[in-house]
Picture (tube, rainbow, N blue to C red):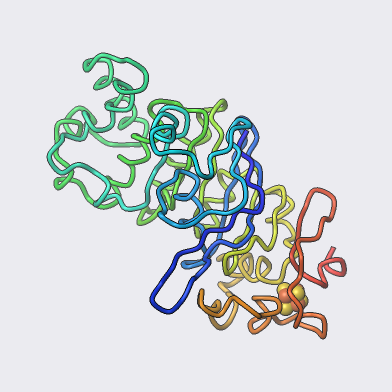
Length: 308
Ligand code: SF4
C-alpha cells in the first residue's frame, strides 16, 4: 500500500548539504501497523513529513502510495490525498491547533471536509472521539478553545482529529509526547481500533511501539538499522543499537547506549554510523554495512549473523 524505495531527503544549509534521511526502504501493508523508532535527530520526523510533501527537502528515491509515485507530485495533487486518504497527526499539539476554533469543530472538520458530514454529525462524532480518549465531560471540552486544554489534552485532540475521518493510512509523529502511561494506552487503543487503516508511526517511546506495532523499524543517524516483526524485535533485537534500546527499558534497568549519534554533517565518509558507540565493533566496521536479510528481518550490521 505504502512503499518506500531508497528514499533520501536532503536540505541545503549554510555549511553545505545535509541528508537527515538516507536511502530508507520500507513497506506498510493495508491495515498494517509499522512503527519507526529512533532518538531525536535520527530523521524520523523529516521522513514522515516528506511522505506528505511537507518537509521542504529534496527527495530522491521512490514513494509509492497505492502504486502511485508521490515523490515530485504537484501540490494540487498532494492536497487531494492528504486528509482524505492519508491522515496526519503532527507532534506539536499547541502549535497545530487553531486557537480561534473550538475543539469540537476542529476535531469534526475532517469529517465535514472529506466525508461530507453535516456540522451536527461532525460535532457528535468529535464528542464521541473525546469520550473514547477519556475526556471527562467531553461535551464541555468540545465547546472549549485550545488554550483551555493542557498539553496532554491537546495531544489527544490531535489523535482524535487524525483518526476521526478513518483514512486508509495514518501517519503519526510522536503521538504520545507528554502523555502519562494511562493516556498512552488510550492512544494505542484508538490506533488499534481501526483495522482497515494502516499506520506508520514514528516515536522514541518503546512501550508505545510495543503496544501498537506489528512491525518495527529502527532509524539511527538517518538509516534504518533493523526492521523486524514486533514480537521478534522486542524478544531479541539483532542490531547492537536496537539491543541498547531494549536494554534501556525499565525491566532491563535503563541501560542505554553511551555517547551520542553523529551529527548530520558527519554522516559522509564514515564506516558504520554506530561504530563509536558500539560495544561489538570489529575490524569490518570501518566500512559502511548494507542492510542484510535474515528471514523476515533486515539488519545493518556486519556481525548480525552471529547474533541470531
Ligand atoms: S557494523 Fe560493527 S559497529 Fe556497526 S553495529 Fe555492527 S558491530 Fe557495531
